[in-house]
View 1 (cartoon, rainbow, N blue to C red):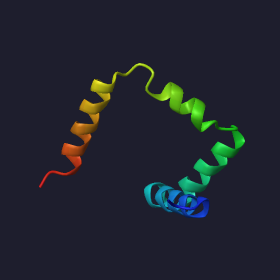
View 2: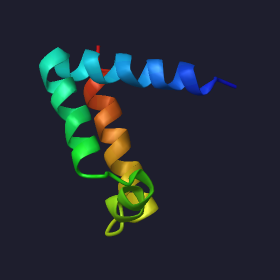
View 3: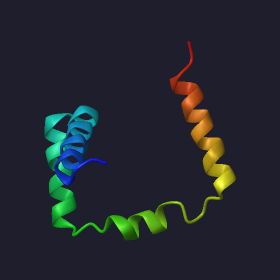
View 4: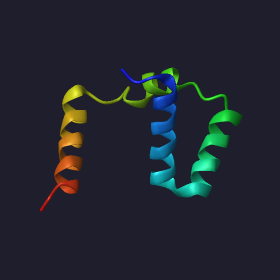
Amino acid sequence: MKTDSEIINTGFESIFSALGMVDAERFIMLLKRDKFDYTEWQKKLWSNESVESLSEKAQKAWDQNHTV
């Protein structure tokens, strides 16, 4: 099991890798400014999707990103 510090570090590394330094900083500031509630966001994120439709989308994304 990872420690809280390890999770935070991995999260920051992922955000900076995906967005670059400037946009990652903007992302973090937006979360702080808007009092972002991850749990509420997660509840609403897939509210109009079924497990089957999400699985199908995930498989398509996997196939697109892992073709030889």
